[in-house]
Length: 306
Image (cartoon, rainbow, N blue to C red; front, side, top):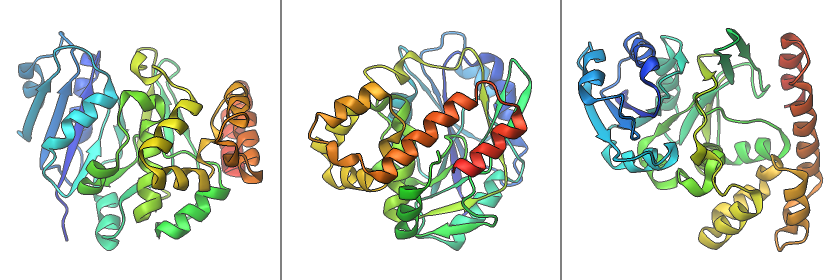
């Protein structure tokens, strides 16, 4: 059994949240071996400030970018410093249950073939002080989906793997992650669905972490040059195996009508199949409903639409 894990923390404009992230880490029943902190060009944060919050004296690797290069490039840059069996990426504003790491690593040790673990999504809206918990209806129990079963589920079901929920096998993550500016907001989803489709994944239904939403969190790099057709073309040219997996599981349903029309008149028309259209329509309906329906109804719709 191997329970050694590191936590990778990319940070920009996050000084006010440093007390939070160290509180979340310190409260874990299973402590990390190392913290890899990437200061993405934030002049208000220094190594001394971060070290002062590191009251439990975790081994701290502090990386300072000369300028803001974005969360994706920062994560990619930090990969070479990962030394432990498992890696967890945390944002400074995330909120975690104290047994988060132990629960996920228990599952990953039971299923060493798995590339990663993840759990039901949830988020906290800071300005509204509201918590949302979603059941994506994959299983009521902790379960390992091998790569075949995961691809079958992903092909038919409509769900996201929230970026705050996974723990990864480090070597698999370093080999198959899509953290690059080009993939923008899709970087984490591409990474999660490719790794799960290649190696299988452990799913934990219990809500154990909250992704915090607030007005200052979105980096301009997440949307730079982003569009579905460009991503399709890029993956097709670089990695046919990954391209075929993503087409097979109807991954690209989260797109605009404009992008859908562009795809129809491209060589990637084959991605538009019956299950793809169903997922596309479900997600569009969900995005409309989420703007005005009550919280309980919204949570119910996520479970049903998944």
